Image: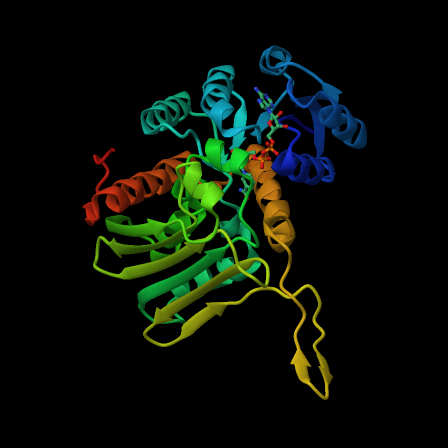
Length: 335
Ligand SMILES: NC(=O)c1ccc[n+]([C@@H]2O[C@H](COP(=O)([O-])OP(=O)(O)OC[C@H]3O[C@@H](n4cnc5c(N)ncnc54)[C@H](O)[C@@H]3O)[C@@H](O)[C@H]2O)c1
């Protein structure tokens, strides 16, 4: 039996806690959320966990791993504590909003030798994974360029935006990771433009709601990202990969596989509401991978260094947008 502790009983903490507790070989022993105590008590009762403080988790030698799903500003400290206590780590993105802190946390986790899965769940989505497999197997031919769309259904509240670190670190970081994952190589140049075209509240909070980012890989291949905080029909999460033998498309997943036709034409089912529904399989798969990592030592599809490299691209996008210039990056580049 694997004993886990979950930090954070919010939106994504619920998903991870329920997925972990649903696994036969897992006991979620502790749930930690000193801020949202009512929410935490409700979730703890659902999964049979004890409410605990961080000290109890890190001093309990029976705890094999921790799931860090708390607010972003808590991740780095929890990573450091988990690393020194020898606990396997499942960590939500981003590692920190401060790049120097990201580097410190990543170096400490790597030096400790503890296993760590960085929660870029899109790598565990069956459709995105299938695309990656066709590229790696050579069936699709040589990858030449990628186009990705990420549009939220509606703008987040201003309070969320103010603490998010901005759209590149909060939302587009998944796309930056997917670009590296599909290309199988690092990014060399980042050119970003962004503006506030949708919600003036986002602009007042100092952020953008619409962006386009062009990435060039080390070998000279291109990725075009389109990111935005609204799509009038709902969640828009699509991918197009041009290879020499095939074009691979990941389309939006409909809520129902039924279209309705009448005298006015055909109406397709709307897409799944948002990331919790769209990536439900991916969240289950990444939790299974975390448990497998603890049980068998299998490497996860995304590790702690992938969190650092995706964030390096996010930081470069911020600088590029401010300066109006492409930014050349490598493993020594920092903002
Ligand atoms: N991979 C994904 O798809 C995905 C989706 C959503 C959020 N996230 C990330 O997950 C993290 C949480 O996001 P959310 O949307 O669930 O936020 P949220 O605000 O709904 O939940 C965060 C929870 O953490 C709790 N918390 C604060 N300090 C804590 C501490 N010291 N110890 C334990 N718990 C603490 C808060 O009380 C809150 O309940 C963020 O870093 C976010 O970027 C990732």
